[in-house]
Image: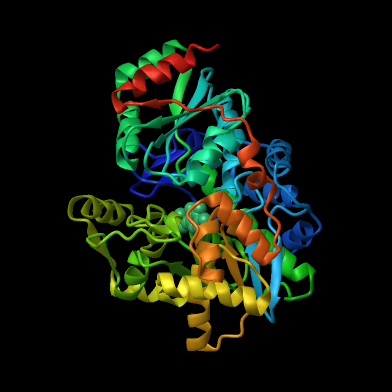
Length: 495
Ligand SMILES: *Cc1c(COP(=O)(O)O)cnc(C)c1O
């Protein structure tokens, strides 16, 4: 199966090339030529499998450059790094209501589900496409992605990773997580300034031909771990298939029954994977797209106009504070009959005017499957407290956004379809806000808030976050943004 660009279908590449290149050269995103179908027999087989086997099976239908055995090897390596027995347990909190926990990985957030797989896919794809140089991953991070990428790429053969974070732009907890990063192929460095300073410095490197030549002379080629890479999206389809299998095998539903998934969304990658799973044969009634007050997606699915001219709000669910949801491009490609010229035109309008619209028919067909809603900061805090009271379930701020939107949906529709709330982070990743929601007491220090939250809830602090303050600090360097080139060149001299 080949991959085509959403902006020019005549650009066709193999799965390995799609993963190596990340983005198509016309600026479009790679999508599979067609969606593989899972039959009843496939589901019977998947149900008897472990999670890594399910991942390998689903990915083998998309990634023809890899054998099932290779994919299974990567999945075993990736998901053995998760804590607890099941990498993504489905917790039954109420009649017909489930929480799919995607945060049992090394950084306690859902990015781990794909960022532990991507390094293996990428490093093998390099070899398969005849590349002999090592891969250097550069990341500018506002917090969560950097740490998840560091953990994913740590000690993966043929790769090195350098993460730059803004010296005054990440939380204490996030800073500590990165400064204590382990691994022989990692480097972390603060850049003086805010996130934009760090991001534009890293972008400059990607556009600097002379710099790329110097890196190549040192045996390195640049790559990014960005969420639009097909190698990050594909592993996300697997957990939707897997949770559907779990619902069947536990007797909650029968094969062919439909379920709702409610997903806290930002860049639209997670919920898009749910849609792709539905195209493969997972029974889906509604996909509920939940936003915080940065509700550009709610407005889009209501009016058909995507308009980025709006105020940016900092919220307690920061991973959803996004105005441009890049992966929406892939969804629109499917709903406009795969009209590449039309997508190119709309994305051009987005770049030039900061907005675009879809037709009435497209909006109608989108609304047949997608429901939307958003939660205010007060709604979010209230739901955290309520779910703890009523279900004895502790959830993070992002998951609470989804739960709040689901509550509204249920109230409006009385839809009794079994529903899965997709949970994207462990509560201890956001201890200050979660504790405040429960106890009406905002404690600024993350370590102190963690202790308080533990005492209040009795919930265990997950292993990766538990002993952070006892881990040795390895990376303390702070540089000016002009020094980023020399810092990178210095790093690659190490071996
Ligand atoms: C990245 C992230 C999201 C948003 O996911 P998208 O795929 O970007 O829509 C939601 N919650 C958490 C905790 C995240 O890290």
